[in-house]
Image 1: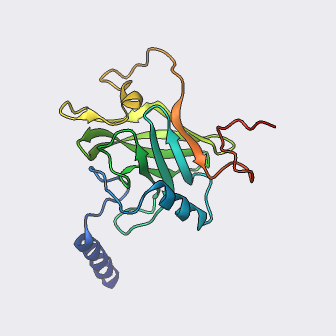
Image 2: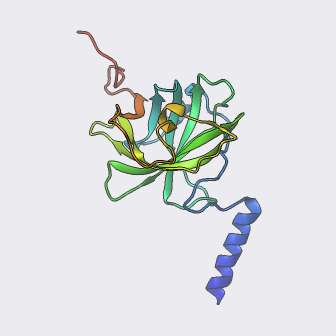
Image 3: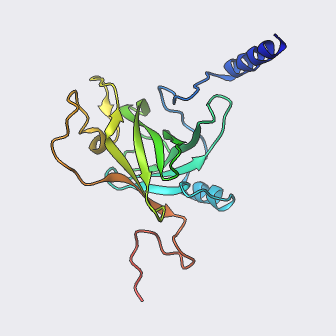
Length: 202
């Protein structure tokens, strides 16, 4: 009885501070302060990094984001990482916008990943779930498009349209496409400062 009352008190305190999202991301994105590229690099430089952490580029949409560990009483511990926008060709999106969340699986190369799929001005909505695979040298994170699960809404534009354009009412995929995902650009892959996707000339 005492344990139940204590749990109720914890949940009430969480609710007082804001919504409790559990294992699922918020329906609408959160915008965090202090997320310029320089601030993101400083955060990464000052903490021991997991293979998934770093600054990543999504070249299809000219988006740069940082993947970082986080914890919050509003979220389940299952959601271990968040993806935060630090630069975008789309000027309506603010630096610090959380564009997705990541959970680990039993396979340390595969992750459960949510990306927001719809855009309404500066807001992102409709988190869509997919499976993402980290390659062996931790330089690319590839999304399995046919595992994406999203609800179609016709009054919003699509966020990341090249990723979500293949998702329709039909579950079939007509042809194999090139992989879509993130490329890591920071930290550099070696002590000379060479980036993962950069050719170094001798």
